[in-house]
Length: 536
Image (tube, rainbow, N blue to C red; front, side, top):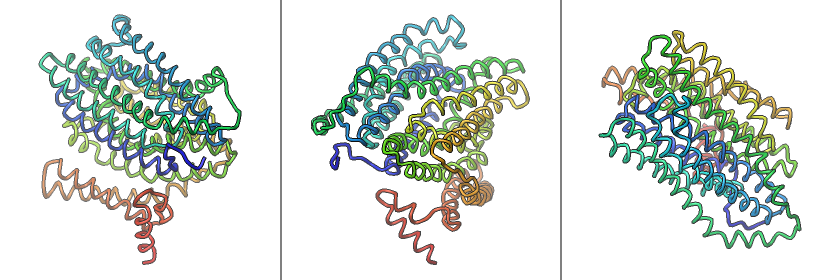
């Protein structure tokens, strides 16, 4: 159709919209852990992390794959003009998610005591937190159906708005509840922090319902213009939704279970070499809550590109346009490598300084340095997984991810009680995504004859990263010598790296005017600037 109420965006436009939102969310998510970490301490953060792991497990089991599945099917149906079925896909998914989300919310709330008694949760203090966070599963499930609709129509703005609203309310409520409950001890304060996720989930759901209702008349009118006569049955739609959603959800479940097993393995294995239970919990908190916060920020663009690729690739695949798929994937991989390489290098070089700056915990730099390389591999994994999901091969990235997880668990089990300590768990996480991203690329090459040229992809960003790294080290040492302390030298070094890297990359030809022209808004101006630099 020439006219759509969804304001369809290109892959890059959608990715940039989501990236801005994700960067805001990730930065806010990392920054709010500064006061939260200082209020709760390492032990409190470790308690706070456990209910989050179980929430993630239940959420991914019920809802994580729904936006991908719904978006893929809706985009495919829109591409061939089956607008009525596109709307029916959303309505079927919404009804099922209401029931499934409600059931699993009740299950976590009622089963929290059993999880403690059975020993599956080694921290009894996490009981209240698990019950507090249980309602979020219901609202997240309903929200997943709405996000799948808007993502399928390639309107990423609505998705971004709901995510930002969710995070802002979550952060506000988390800090408020934990502060008010702090006098009652770290366990109660941690449960208050878990309860803080509820207002954000409710707010995001209400926002999406409101935005949908505002456009419902136009959406229904669009569906009525469908004269194809094609009507897919409800059972068939459900089968298609869950045949895509379940593998994606299983990947999320596998990661959540890995986090739960990690918690138990790390705590138990560290105690074998002399750590107390509280010290082991603190080490896990540094790894899972502090170090991983930086990694989550560095993969924001990859998360957005992966989400944007699903409907775009599904549309191209439905039209059998393999050239377009190869082009979309090539551009996405170029972008994530350009952004993730310097991020990984910066996290490695300034790991203790960054954790001291944000969390007042220099020792958290140990797992962060060991984790830093995962920024690149995880980014490639996210983009290639989005492409495979768009091609209807959602099982493939899950299989590849599970292979990496199995290797990671072996590394954590055998190497944590060695001098590596918590670094073993971090290195295992790097292995997960190094293996899965490599296997994803092999699978894509077989499906669409995609050629991943490592030298072409990496040499310019790699050289620019080396120059940036040297500059960051020099600037930090000079600033530390002149100013002293940690905070200002670290901030100055980070800013210097952010300025040096793109300049070197432009000089090397790693960023071109044609790349900038595809950016919405300021793209034309940036392209003109690069043209001037190139002519000189």
